[in-house]
Image 1 (cartoon, helix red, strand yellow):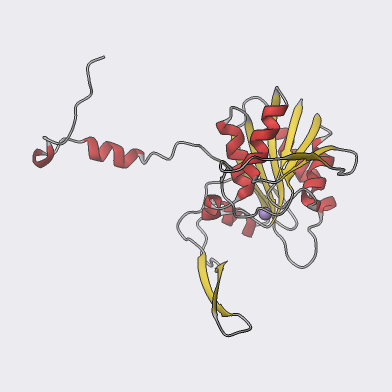
Image 2 (cartoon, rainbow, N blue to C red; image 1 turned 135 degrees about the vertical axis):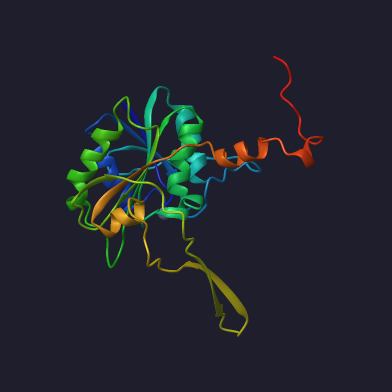
Length: 253
Ligand code: MN
């Protein structure tokens, strides 16, 4: 099977190499990744300038670096290689939990793959002091790929690894809290600056991605692309006496 590897930390990230070494057990691996870090770029695509793609040595893997975003890399990789079974994005150095799904370039590249008709798997790991223990994660990463590269697995899955996993757990996305924070600072001349940062979330809802990580479990969240608010759609379509004139009725088929 053909596996396209992308990331948002940049092509020289140790997380990407760690993923490539495990992924090659499952099939043929190609790497197409940003030439510099593109974390928190979300699903941006580059449309106002052309992209270049250059072959670059990453171990003994076929690898190309792109002067674009993670989603650009997924698109260029899938364009150049036919019959790709899955796009694997990561391993990101840092968790992508809860509402960070809106910003994550790691998850966005996997989502871009699904938009283009391919399977997408995003992989992220907690970071603390020093590099993550990729050797320790290996059996769990192996198990995750075994599970997610099979036919009936969900098409888009966001996977997060705790420091020392004890098992795998299917989770929902924790959306009750948004951890976005603006931190003011000053430059050396006393002028105002700002950092966009995160605040720790104390409370976690059971069965969510954050909950799994707190409990030492690898979190697997199956995701969908349809953002429609089903409950609101039903509610807004209910006839209300005051509004009947603005509501269209479905045209005859
Ligand atoms: Mn990143």
